[in-house]
Image 1 (spheres, rainbow, N blue to C red):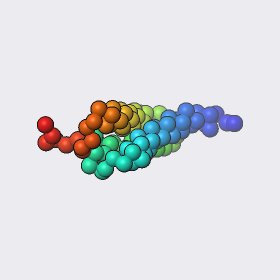
Image 2 (cartoon, rainbow, N blue to C red):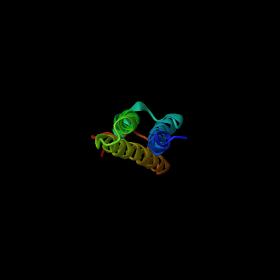
Image 3 (tube, helix red, strand yellow):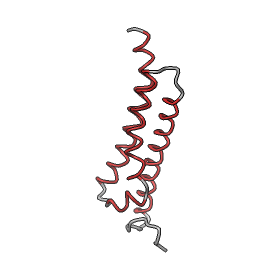
Image 4 (tube, rainbow, N blue to C red):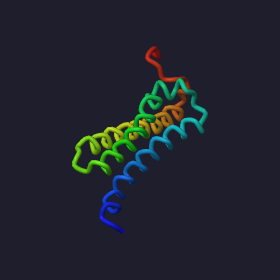
Length: 109
């Protein structure tokens, strides 16, 4: 294996992990029957698609332009978005377990 393929592997793994975390978080809400209002209220609806897009865009920049700092910055932003999705999905599990099943909105008491 040449050195360019070996240097691409960690970046590809990072993009795949970020994507998997975002997809699993959204899928867990969907499988548990939570509505789009819940996903919207938890900002999962806002953070999952950009996490997917920015992870692979960051990988592309790192692979094509290794010296460019934008690629790692995009990967970090995507990782933060995916982490938010995971924490929001876990928080929703806890909220439902405590008995609150309504959508999270700005006008709830």
